[in-house]
Image (cartoon, rainbow, N blue to C red; front, top):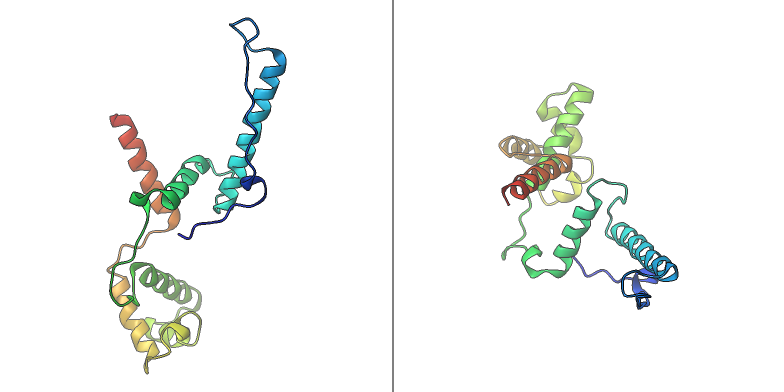
Length: 173
């Protein structure tokens, strides 16, 4: 993930306010209101930060998703790196995308896999991805059957699995 530059309010620090105690036990009403204002400003900035990182602030897991995004951006152990070597044309995501496209097209048109692949060979992203190949429909057909061996799950399913694992680990502590 590229380091995202923060602008506007996210680039403006919050002026720290000291909260002196009146009688050693309680904050004055004025200090309580100032503390509330600071807390609201921090909360508003957290919502802007979530939005900045592409997270829906209304998502019930927005806080956890934001923590993950920030960890990926700033903690070396969360960074994702690509393996060395030539780029792989058919990674799991691309296979799953192809499988989804073919199955959806087949469902709508009631065509065979081979005919569907002939149709999709003229569509983006497949025609551009495979422009170097002579027989694009055959490549799509072959990769479709490879994709059937791959466990393709949606982002929602992936997040549900993550949350289930998170809750299990939380209970174990």
